[in-house]
Length: 551
Image (cartoon, rainbow, N blue to C red):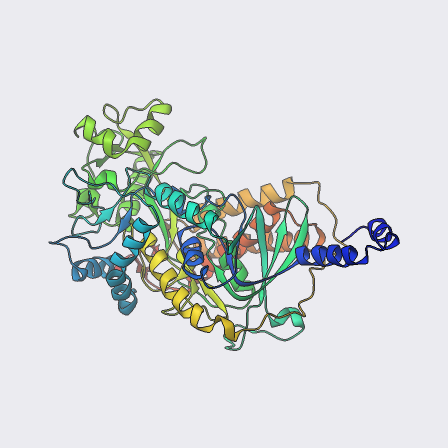
């Protein structure tokens, strides 16, 4: 707030109007009013912002830099039907097959048929997809796809998409960007003293409490409409291709606000991350490399994927990840190999320059050496349950991208379907929201954040140790292969960590690590609970108690 001495001086100088202005300025910075509050800055959140910003005031909250998101690290590309012999029906069927019988077919058809228009939108925003000398797109093929339909930019597609869209967002006069701000909790009737229960249909979202960790001040952002687009939760596991920001924050916030969360048992492990134990996050070796012809082999150089699926190294990710996991366990090896030595060296380097340079930096020449790889947590197929317009079960709250559950992925995501889902649903949600957002009034009587009685915790070890234990529990008991016994042990141990962390949270001045740990524990609980409820093996959820996979 404004310092009392400053007010006294201004009033003494008969400058009372400046005093009022500065008081308003101070309050304004503790409470913001916007039409659209967007939490997260990947493709889903940023494209939604651009689609509504010509009509309304937008505020983007992101806990790191604007371009730091899962989108940035997507290597392979974005799936869309572009040329014959590919067509919508083929893409739809590939998606349904990959989803193991749990996809929402209407959603799949909507996304596949609306994808080409959104690819054109990305191009108009400045995204450069690789082309052949004749000017047509250089389409790649990945596991589970029956045709070449993956648009890409070298092996850094996500980086290119994020670069282009960030430039457009930063240039827009109606978009305010709050970098290095952390959304702590959503604001609902609960904060007005009213009872809120899950499955109630009258819950409203009025915005969010966000903290600037530089000032340690929690601000109230009041919005007509809030959009949750915080990405996935890969960091609940020891090994993940996700950046450190992927801690499941949005899902945890919506769960605490009594929104419905669905399909959390379906965690996709990318089969091939670079085996380099000292590095986190794990460097992703894109599936497109297998589409280009690279072959999985055991440490002694033998191919093994044909034992598990007739598609070999191009089987869907769930099958490949389980196969690698099984080979490692029965042989006692810490990794397998991806062999690209038989491929044209120049073509390999041209297609995968980022991977070539990364491997070279750790002493591996991919044209001459096999690449050591292990599966790593990569993508969440479940999340915040939304309808066909991206609207969650909480009114005035949309969820987009990996943090949402649209029904596209079912029990297993088809490679490169995630980026197209993000922008297609951003289009659907933006159209729906622009029709309705003026119907919603800003809720002005929201109480300010109350941290009375909290103290700064000097013992960071209390947070870091619980985070390590949680990641070990999830990796060892709730990983690629599960069982009823493992899941029970995971839940029992996670409960202890949850109780300790909640007590610490109530007593402490907020820190990012503490907030993230609290969110990751919430998400871990949801994964375990969903896995326990599914009495079968299907897609990404494989349990030893039900070994016959359903499809």
